[in-house]
Amino acid sequence: VSLGLDLLDRFDHLIRDLGYENRSEAVRDLIRRKLVESEWEAPDAETFASVSVVYNHHTGQVLEKLNSLQHDSYAQVISTLHVHIDHDNCLEVVVLKGQATELKDLAEQMIALKGVKYGDITMGTTGAHVS
Ligand code: NI
Image (cartoon, rainbow, N blue to C red; front, side, top):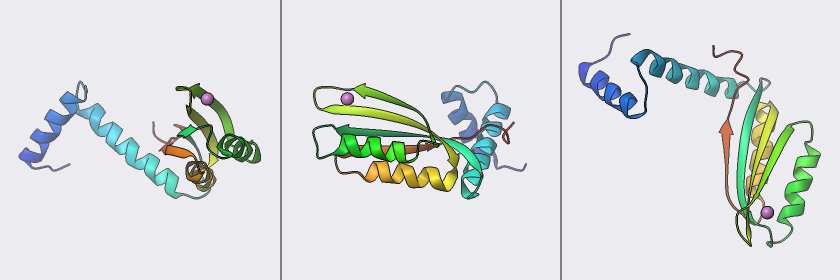
């Protein structure tokens, strides 16, 4: 791998700040990240994801709709963590397993529900192809 000294110097500073002990592990992590991203581009690849949503449980039917969406896709929903943040707000973290396209679709439906103030999906991996 050929790199300019400036680029390498900036990279070394960055990975030191991030807590990497050496450049090799940082480079391996970058490669794995790109491989996981490419897994997510393959429509039928099985993978994992976590979806986080923050919502006001008093708003509309958000609690019921979120519950229905998860029951409609029970085969993909591995686990759900519900946190009562305060009197009004809830955080739900949903771990999903299945085909990337299905997981993205389900996550988008949850995030788009009326009453959901914030939502995000984190792409995961089975870990099998990023050793
Ligand atoms: Ni709650």
